[in-house]
Structures are given as C-alpha cells and as structure tokens.
Image (cartoon, rainbow, N blue to C red; front, side, top):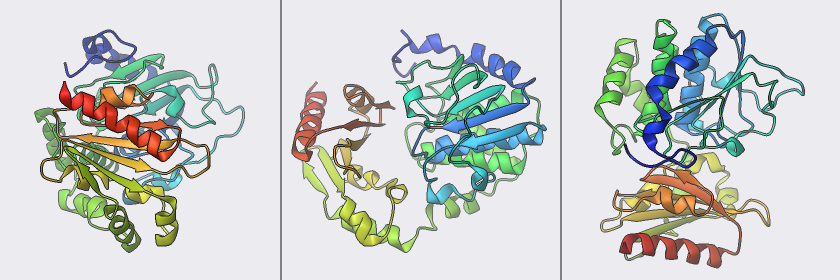
Length: 337
C-alpha cells in the first residue's frame, strides 16, 4: 500500500474490491443522478465525472453534472463538458450523488444537496489523504486516476464502453499520470489505456487537444511566472500574482502545469507554487510537486490540505512572507529527515 489515509487507519481498510460492487448496486436502480467533483476541477476530476455521466446517460438515466467553477480550458472538448451546470436549484433531489477526486466534502460546491435530497452519496477517489465522507467510499490509493475507478464501474454495470466515455477516461488518466510520465503510471492504467484505444480513442488526437493547443495568453502568463522562479538549495518556487493574470488577460485555469517547470530544474527535489489570493484576507493557495524523496502530501496535511506523495496542495492565510517562511521551514525539515 502506498500510504496511510486520514480517516482510515490503514490504506487496505478502504477495501476497493469490496466497495466497487456497492457502487454498482447503488447505481443500477437510480433514475436521477448528480455527478460533481472538487472545486477548481482538473483533468482527472472532470474527465472521470464526465465519463460516468456519459455512460449513465447512455443507460437512460437523468444525469446532472455540477461544478460552480470554470472548467480547465484544455478539457472542455470532452463530451458533456458544455452541459456542466454552475448552480443547482433549491430542493433539487437525486437518487444518487457521486463526487469524484474530491478528497473531502468541503472541497465540493455550495449547492450540493444534503441528505436526504442527495440520495446515496458516493465518494470516488484515489488520494492518500481522502476523508471517508460518502455513504459508499470507493477509494483506491493505488489507482493512477479516478478514471480507473470509473472504468471499473462502467464495466460492472455491464455497459459497452462508448468512444465518448472512453475519451473522458483517457483524459482523466492522461492528466494524473502526466501523459504517462509520472510515478503513478502503472501496468493497470496502461492496460486500461489499451482498452480505451481499442474502444476508439486516438492517442495523438487526445495529446494534441490536452497539451498542444495552448492559448497564446497562457504562454505570455507562463513567461511572467517563470520570471519569479527562485531556487534555494533543493527547493524551487514560482509565484502567480493577480497583476500577471490581469496584464495577460488570462485566468487561474490557465496556470495548471506551471509548477512542473520549477520541479524540472536540475538538483531540485521539491517545487512549490504560490497563488496570490484574489480577495484581501483570502488564503494563499500553495501547490507542491516532489521528485519522490519528500512526501508533499504529509506537508500539505499539516496545513489542512492533502493530495498524493508527489503532488499535493493546501491553502494558508497570512502575509506572503510569513506563508513562504512556514512552507520553506516544513520542506527543509522534510528534506533533512
């Protein structure tokens, strides 16, 4: 097992093989299904949610996909992305509500209905820091992406995999394995990727649409952010300021992946990205990337965040200098262990 999970004593206690059939059994009789994912969705959260929505709609279910935030620009081509709603009416009721890639209930949108209106709440995740907030928690820390779990759910429902759903799952896996480059890449996700290609996915087309059709404004923003790159020993940092976003006419959704440039510096073990608060008094958002020696999920957890061993994040309120000092201190301690 990769790690111990918050809220569950041991990773093996998630028992994904036992919880998969519980998810399938909950979905079989459901007529109205709500699918959501963490706020500020990424490719894994969105791709896995849209894949499940595709399959359920093909099975005749009434499906609503909800997220109040802007979708990542490079995943908006996926089937169903244009149908994602940013709000839900008061009193909306569902037989089943599914949350993908969320880590904890407080990362979900404000309109999410509470019990009993939400129906059976299903938590689909693979983070090592996941909280068991669902009625059913299908969590597998060994899975490369939540799309892997969705692939198994669709198979469990006995539904043939459509090209639309396959593309969404492929996008999910592509995102969380860094185009099959990260340490999360394993034989299971590669076998599933092969099945997705057999279902009609074009790997080159997917790579182009996700990684090689970047808006010019994003490249201009990247140039400004790289100007903040600072290296102190084995820690590299970048900073994303509001004035940069305003000057380039971009948005926070265009900054995904910037931190990888900092991690790629030779000799760096940990990279941290600092996102300036959009409103006064709001917390700084910090993202971490590790080459593997340092468990950045453990660092993020100390500040109420979470994630994976090599990719995690948290939010910290305070002055920039204080926030930076706290993060640098924790990282230094982790590297000296």
